[in-house]
Length: 252
View (cartoon, rainbow, N blue to C red):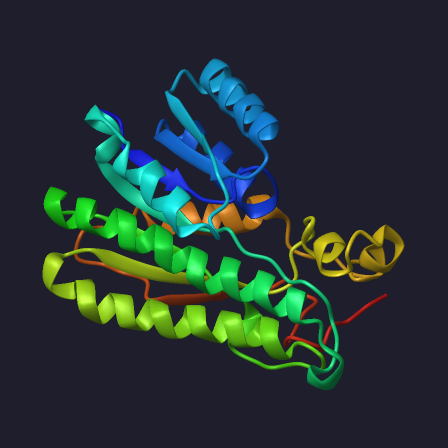
């Protein structure tokens, strides 16, 4: 039986790259996301290209009941989730706290923290019941360093950092691995979303140096899941060569 890997936020960026990488390595997949058409298209492409099985589940991870229903409705082999990649996340806005938009704050908190918790709470009992599992939380350099106007986004990623450590402690007795992968700048839709669709402003973020590609992060995520049973990567920070910290980059 193929391994089953569940990836949240699989319709673009790091999540989509992870789906492709794991599919290439013959994992059957459960992929989730809000954009149903994109999700179904990706599922069909992966099944055709890599001869695996893919179960697409379209829902918003911010909605607790929808998340619980998606996982509780799994049947047969789909309950045997061996790897959970908690990838769904976003930044919204780049304002000072005093000028922050409450809607931006709630969107980030609901997705980056509560969504991760809802999915983990639904999946972990299945892993414990199966006697094995590996949780990969996609964090960020923003969970290690706070930068100007990053306030609430950084706070959500610091929460992911803390939750990863807490999950590792809670799950160690069950033999379940927990890993955080914390990337620096990755060229995805991230900045488009942060700047509310301002494509020109978003493009500037990645100019003058070589940022990480989603595929770079996916390769590291996959690698973390291939180590021997007795080896666990607790925390891994992944940066472009041209990026030394959250805000220090060498641009040509």
